[in-house]
Image (cartoon, rainbow, N blue to C red; front, top):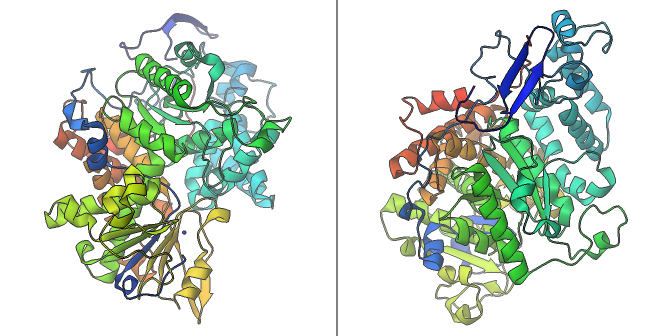
Length: 609
């Protein structure tokens, strides 16, 4: 047991013994001479800001700080599960040793009909299960057949959530082994519909709900969560859920879905993950009038009231979980997302997936596409449709990568990147009316109102989610470009037949980045997120696209190998963290790839004593 853990002593009883144990327990376009120079059209609808821009805003850099905690990092195996071999029995700890009827109701320990005869006898399960004993593989086969009988995607989502709530390991094994089929079910696009209907399909609460009612008592609420060794929190206030807008408290489906991917794709242990929704009300009148709405029925709090609640939350999280707790901001509206990231990036280990994760996965796609075209990144001129969080964030990360490769100031690299917002091309004559995060992209050029035409060989990334909000479909992209486009999207599209050729589009999905990125931070004990860590993650992802992928027009590797991809990203991110002096886990593991793989949760059943 981890002797550093401090918690009350609980008594556990089994047939054999009595213990005292510690509890660990997007493409329109414009035909003009200007735009004919572009080699890429990146289509986005939302967000971002990186290290250089944010330092201009706050005057601080993450490298200005030292480790305030001073203790080692890494993934703590608090239950002893991963220190044991797969054949070595483990004790199914809960607050007490799980047994009998309660064991069948505990998703962490329940194995259903896979309990052996010996386990049934030792844990008072005799008579509580039918007599057949079947393997986890057979259970998985049966569940997949059941899922295939559903014709409504939301029903598949609900079935998967039910499984997660009753048998955690079987849920993750099914998801990992069938990730290309089930990823769209447990996350985008289906999760969008699930959030819209969350009040109607709500069954059992998942994660923590922190509302304005708890102001002044947030630390107490955090302590109500049964798991104490939390390593990653995904938090939303529900104001901009995917491309669907304000869904208030029903945005909880996003943190729950993201953390399922942290475990399935990145190997972060489920017990170390905490989904949180901060409920400050909603401006969605449809929800406010809905008798089944599960959140606060009031308009959103703003200004000082909002800021104070978030400040209390961030302070309480660090107080309760320590310096190295990773806090991932998810689906906050633009006006809050930038401010929160700029405010807390130098005091907390924070990451905004909509901003930074999107930028990293798009940069990886751009680097891969450059290889496919046989040209260097710096040889291209980039045009973005969209200048919000994702648009400006991706632009900044590309500029940083171009600057790094060409060894030129980032200001020079930015001159090769142009953005179009709702009022047209962002140019210097518009500076007085631009938001602060658009100013670095206001270059000298006559005003242009529309975007009609892109380029000879466009890279089109339709990033908005879910599918209903995508800027264009794969079929539209290939047809419009007469088969010349390289296309990827945030949500999946089926293969397209055009002029006798089959085009298979890829996914520019943040799930390529954030699980491995988070694992790398956790396993190295990293205390702050620096832009160089994001560049490292992008480069690691791009490096895993093969010539075979390029031959198919794919700029990302298949999701089938996502666990290995995540481990490589984690190792690369950890290596950069050590180089920057941001990692606190000492000594540094000799083989970071091997260490990353050893830290990853595996969902096979364990044998119980």
